[in-house]
Amino acid sequence: MLDDTAQRLNERFLRQIPMTRHMALEITSWDGRTLRMDAPLSPNINDKGTGFAGSLATLATFSCWALATLLAERAVGVDCEAAVFESDIRYLAPIRGDFYVLVAVPERDAVHAFDKALKKKGRARLTLSASIFEQGDEKVRYRGRYAVRMRNI
Amino acid sequence: MLDDTAQRLNERFLRQIPMTRHMALEITSWDGRTLRMDAPLSPNINDKGTGFAGSLATLATFSCWALATLLAERAVGVDCEAAVFESDIRYLAPIRGDFYVLVAVPERDAVHAFDKALKKKGRARLTLSASIFEQGDEKVRYRGRYAVRMRNI
Image 1: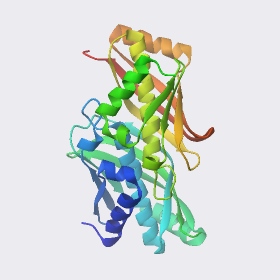
Image 2: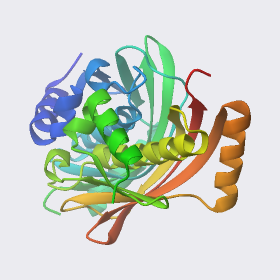
Image 3: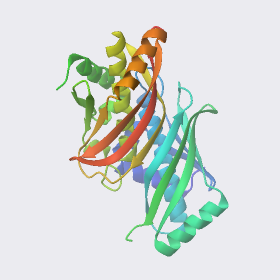
Image 4: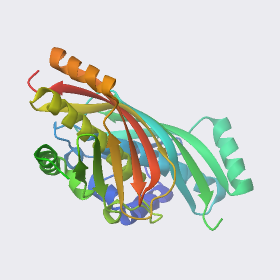
């Protein structure tokens, strides 16, 4: 399930960010509450034949960036720029096949405060959490803080 | 300045880990105290024309992995496997050109404890810190914890 906004974001980042092409990243689902991004193991493999930590960190960081962008553009209806400024990650177990990340929209109060700040000041911050799964098993847990601003501000 | 061990590690990871080739990563210096790894901006650029956070997280995570591997193999003289299990990162400022990471060998007591555990049990853990620079200015600060084991253990 993918609306036009998410599809446009897919096309935009694949064109603008070479690493997302090499990793074969793709938003595969976005229902307004949870974003899912998939990645195949093959281009993201390490010396041990499991998921490369760099690719996992990138997927987690980038999927939350995508959600921050979608939430911001939904709130103000114009293009927004998002950037991560800090994060932490835990690698719970090795990944031995294709994998995907799920990022949930934060609770209503946090989204409300984010929308309000963005509309008022043109800038806002948001903390997002993501987990990477392989066939339903959680393998990586991530939290990142993002700064977002309306473009031309 | 690059000894044979570091040169072999460069060749090994470029062959085994596709993402390191796409990022054009390279250990450019290793004097037994500090490891330096370089990356060009061009393949690691984002939609804003600055360093892609995923590439920066990968460089930091991977350079510490390389140092953990070098320290382990120096301690026991056989091939070792290292894996990150948790990390945190702060992005201090955008990067607008080629960049590099410096990872320092931890203080003597930490290295001594690491060497001793690895020799005794074939496994050990190590916390490493890295900073990414652009022309001498620190742009990213990272800390990661690594689990290392002798191969065939």
